[in-house]
Image 1 (cartoon, helix red, strand yellow):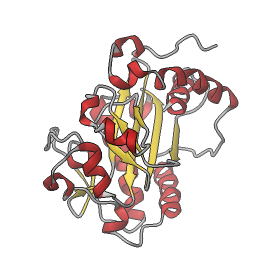
Image 2 (cartoon, rainbow, N blue to C red):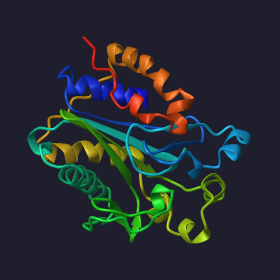
Image 3 (cartoon, rainbow, N blue to C red):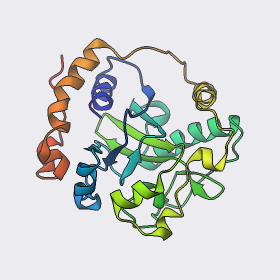
Length: 251
């Protein structure tokens, strides 16, 4: 989370170009949306099972991470991303959707500007711009927007541990039956082929692709931002307004 926010700062200050990155998780973990109620999560169970919980800088609902592919995209609000939240969200969905098609999945993008489920769990809900395969949501995404740019974070579950999810989020079997990992729906899904197809998809939208490591300067800012993400007040959702403005004094 700290790295995503640090990269976003550098992008918005024109120190690096718009940045898309994929990453995974070392152990089963929970992320919740910026303004989500912490009580949506069974904290006692997570503590007992040593499952870390982190509050994201973006919105949305809870996600159980481990056997998944997580992404983030940082951009200024310019060029094809000059429009509204819905417009930028739709463009990113189109880019990812085309990568899925290149990978052999005939996906569709939801067009309804509404949430069709009130569950505390991200993948039990479906709303505008989200990518579905065989009528199941396969990518969960959320945005954080500032005057000069935005950060979008999202997750593609590969396989789903329904027993753990049920314990962590206290959800019913009806919502569990709506959640599938992409490899449960399409067993031939290959992660690295998909990542390569995301690059091809970005190119088809007119982007030039540069593959680079995260800068040492970005990692240094991420290290400073750890104070925020490790702060109990941030996790518990207390006085979130005091964390709302991330560091603007970067030189």
